[in-house]
Image (tube, rainbow, N blue to C red; front, top):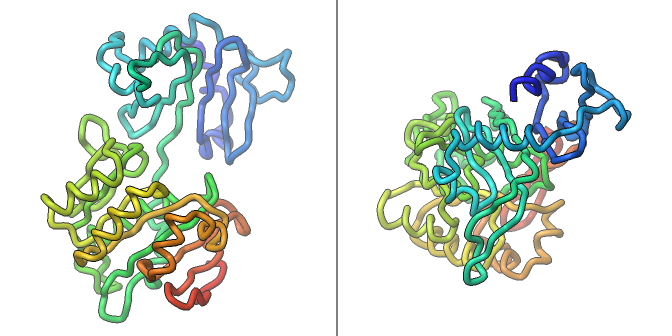
Length: 311
């Protein structure tokens, strides 16, 4: 709504440059998430820590925001409501909360919307510069890579830039460019809007947007002849089976998983199977030691030897 947009215009660019989320919750303070910290917005657009000074989101604010997001047609986003979010121009993602309607134990739609999480899409070109030399051998062959990261430590940002560079090519590293199949189940990597990637994922990348990872990997293997398949946040048994099949057919896999370190993810039986059978040649561990997206270590696939620290 215009009056909320005007409030945000009053906020210092020193904050807005690092804006991650805009949070609207019915009858609660308007909030921003900046560098993983919450900030309430006052009636004059200033940052405040006092609840009694914060702007309180009204039912009319929620209604108007939903009209803007849906372009005044709830039917146009009915499918997206089943998944709880919609991608808008620019690759930004709007998440919904409200009353969920079920049909045969499956989510049919959502109504009585009570909150929005507007997540600002942010790609960092060059985020993978320091990592790329460690995920390929001397002949230019790309390793199977698993990126391990706690939430909000930059794994998707790193993965996106790895895809971009490997797809378009990096002359300084002798990379001419690879055909990459990207399964973007949550629309977080390419951030497609009407089928068009809003983020740069390279010139040789084919994207399956909103497709379950395991099914998407099989579709790509059958139809797109990828050199590399990339996806985000593996964990289910079907994901593991698809990765095994892809690697066994000679396709390289680059993917991510939530976790603090290698020992953490080894506790999950399905993932432990991949690790023990040596499917991955490199493990890239992210953290916060030097800020968001810190490369804590890069581990060799068979010996688990740390070949580089804190880059």
